[in-house]
Length: 271
Image (tube, rainbow, N blue to C red; front, side, top):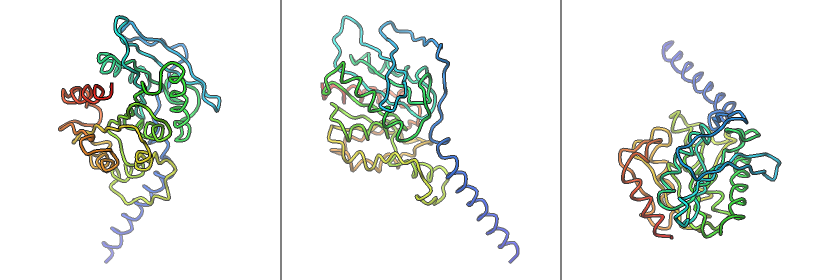
């Protein structure tokens, strides 16, 4: 009996400690920015790009990069790229090539607290950042030329933005249904939903989005489990809009030829 008592006590203590960590440190888990000095100079092995600054309605300055298609080509539209929870534009802007080669301009922001951007990240703050980027694009492009692309954490910003706007297209890469379920899947523990302050509820926002919407997900994703992406499948306009990349993980979808084939096919369908 003593052994059983100590096993139960140890398990209960461990569970309680996990609950305390989740409650106290969830923002640090979700938001992992890599700040850059203001004097940092970006370097990319392309010629058609420029750096710009945006100001949000709550007075935060955001750093942004715009990559354009080659001068001799006419842009087919613009990708608003909303990146994941780690790093900054020096890392994420490398993905521009997958889109500019298809004739699309590529616009990406660093959320508040990331890269050169000011402020401190929060769920509401990232929503404001996404709205600010979209507003900037509306000054330079027609809304029907805007494609919102949200990757991982960025899917939460993208789906909410699409629920409030009418872009040409919404594409989510490795999305989740909501952030609490990501944490529960990683910890393998039934953490009460009442402990969570950060939600990014794609399962709520995606059903409100009226634009065509697509999802790319990998079967070997160890960060956002494939099944969490699959939960969003019923919210798409038709099942084929959920595109599975067999064998892909969370960070390497773009190393699979099928990803590029399907991306080109999806974008071409709405040109």
